[in-house]
Length: 400
Image 1 (spheres, rainbow, N blue to C red):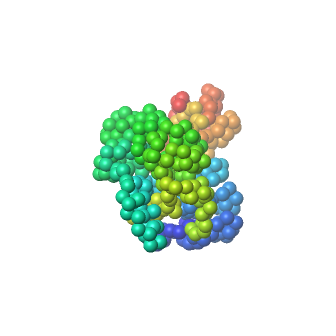
Image 2: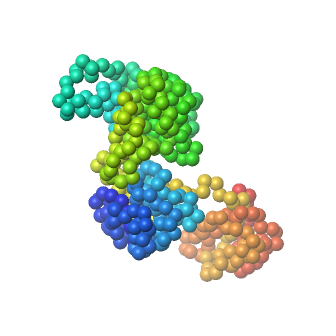
Image 3: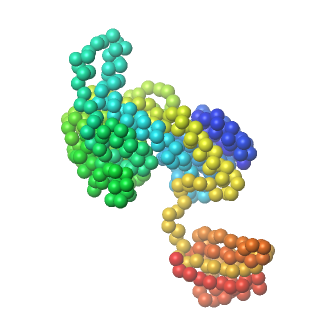
């Protein structure tokens, strides 16, 4: 299996892919049209990326059947185009959770103690202990979490270690799970905003979360409270955040932001970092050796499973609800041409097959085919299927 790795990737991962019997091509600097050509010329069946954008022309250029995002998200991949061409998109969720939570807490401490400003003044030869002796402290302050997935959950024990009670909102958070996590469950994200001294955002970027946190949210926050975003820039209305910084004295720490440069180096032109009380980092939430080694190992597992079984784990673009309405169950002898005859009759009836599996019994003499259909075959069609070959034992139909 040919694998094209088009982003920076751990050597342990490259070795793991080779050990799995893959032919690996490593081209971390390939982007845009150059990457499209690499996909075409390499004949790669698997494409591995981190932050590199994967577009429709790239997916249409060659023979890629699996794209692996070596990270937690997949918003840089044209998932719609992949789905239209039957290309699997998989990711590595949870492998960077600890790294992101560590950075988020580092940013919280940096906001409270103004650590970047302290360090910047010292580097310029300025001593201002009188000013920097002013800090509220974190003990007893309430941490509000927007999202309690893997990263949000990693924030909870760290908050507890600092003596910070935690409240949270998530669409999937139940009362029972909140009790088990030892946190307060809020009924809306606005309740989190009004109840918290520090808000930390940990939600995935989806159509329904784009600019989820906007004017109303920042209006609900307490004056002078802290806001931390280590998730995705697009979940925040950054203009609304800028207004809250200016008008309510909100202090903000951002690992992601609206005008983030695309490459590994460059200049930053986002005016939000010129506002007093705003600090940032260089989109490094997942960038620890521990996290990258774990992500590399998970990427290798995904590719190895795909190579060996044809079914990769962690796929994000399979339909959640099949359009199938009926299940056709065909018990048959395990002989050549049986299923071909069944599918011919289904095709003649103008019925579409959504999913299918064929389970063979011990001894390989008999099998059962389970065929998901988008409509119910008529009694005549069922009769035609059953009589299409003498190797069919029985045909049944179940509504889904």
